[in-house]
Amino acid sequence: MLTDEQSDRMEWVQSALNRYEGPLTRYAARITGDLDLARDVVQDTFVRLCRENDSKVRDKLGEWLFTVCRNRALDVRRKERRMQVISETDIENRPSQDVSPSVEVERQEASNDVLRLLEALPANQQEVVRLKFQNGLSYKEISRVTNLTVTNVGFLIHTALKTLRQRFKAETKLVPEGGLP
Image 1 (cartoon, rainbow, N blue to C red):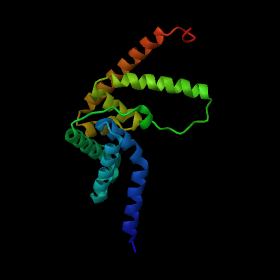
Image 2: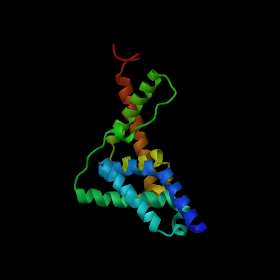
Image 3: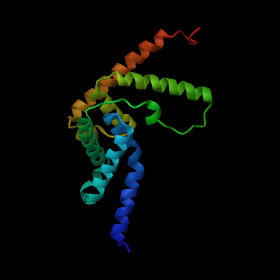
Image 4: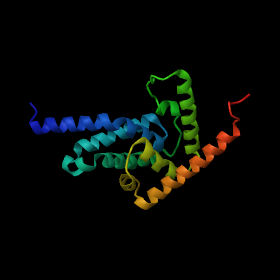
């Protein structure tokens, strides 16, 4: 029979798993280049969470999980000595929305364009942009995860967004209004 404390802890870990497993897997897959390795990294991250004193991480759970995941993924990547880009279809496996197919196709094309442009950015800019916009971390949390200063995080995000805007605008000017003939 579980004590109330053990039961509360199990619920807390399960809640963390439900909230962070997907984002951590995508994040680790970006670093390792391999979805199976990313899943192993995330599993190891949650094993470490189970061993950790929850009072030490409860107030900064997301930040702690992303930091542990990042460090483990970097270790795995170094060990494997390879970096592969996982296809966006594997990473962004979204359920269908209640929108018309043509709108969904347009959104997907625009998203693919932005992700393709994002891939051309330096790795440090890609990482902070993904932590900010795909995982919802604050500049301070990103700073702690990446060991960069908050100012540097802000600069990298600003530079990345400015570059993405310029490149996206330049690409859309190349296509005549109304699409291709």
